[in-house]
Image (cartoon, rainbow, N blue to C red; front, top):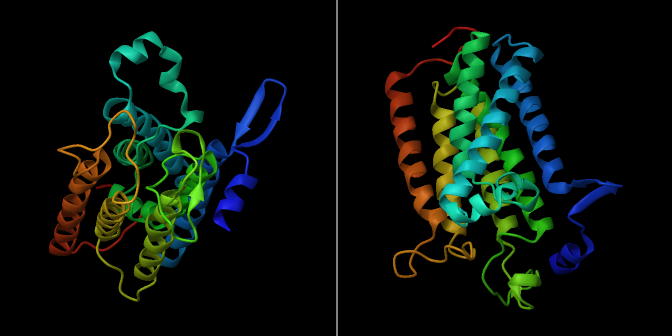
Amino acid sequence: MLNELYHALDPVAFSAGPITIYWYGIAYIVGAVLTGVVMYRTQRRWGLGLTIEDIWVVVTGIVFGLIIGARLFYLVFYGNGLLFYLQNPLQIIAVNQGGMSFHGGLVGGVIGGVLACRSAGLSAWTIADLAVCGAPLALAIGRCANFVNGELWGKPTDLPWGVVFGGAAGDVARHPSQLYEALLEGIVLFTVLQIMSRRPKLPPQGAFMGVFVLGYGIARILVEFVRVPDAQLGYLFGGVVTMGQILSLPLVLIGIGLLVYAYRADRPQRGHLTD
C-alpha cells in the first residue's frame, strides 16, 4: 500500500514555466502556519493575552533562524566538504534538493525566537514552551515531504509496508523511515505535549521545551537504527553509530537538564514579562 502511494506521488507540487514549486517547500510554509495556530490557541487556554501579531512576529523569527541553522548544520556535518561547495557555490542554497538538519534548525530556531522575543518584549521561556506544542506537527509534515522526495530512506525490509524507492536506494523494499519519524517525532510527541498543555496545573516554564528536546532525541536515535545514513558519511566508529545519533545524544542530555532546571525553579508560565 505504501509502495503504491509513494510511486503515485510527485515531488513537484506544480510548475508554470521557469517556476517550480516543490512539496518540500510547501511543507515548511504549512508547518509554520500550523505551529502558529497551535501557539495562539494554546496561549488562549493559558490566559496569556498574546495577540496574533505577537505570535507571528515570533514565528517569523523562528522560521528564519530555523532555515539558516538547518542548512548550515547540514553543510558542516553532513555535506560534501568545503572544497565541493567552493567549486559549486549554488549548492549551498539548493534546499529544494533536501539537505536540512533538524539539529541546526533547533539551534537556529531558538536563536531566532529569542531575538524576536526580545524585540517584542516577550518571555522567551514561555514562547519556547508554546512553540514546541505545535512544532511536532511541522516535523511530521516535513518528514512526509522527505517521503515524497524519496530521501532519507531506511534499510532493506521484508515487512509488508516496505517501499521500493528506486534510484540510489535500489530496487529493494526498504523501511519508510521518514514516516517512522513523522509518527514518533510528530504525532506521538505532539500528543504528549498537548496532554501536558491541557493539565489543570500547568508544568513550570521550560518543561515543555525539555520534553520536546528529550522526546525528539530519543525518537531520532531509535529510528536511526533502521535508517540508512547519508552516503557521504556512512556509519561512524567502526560501523556502529550514525551522525544523526551522535548529534541526538546531546539533545537527550539537554532535555533532561531542562526538565530538572524547570522543576527546580518551578516558575509558572507567563506572557508579556521579559526574562
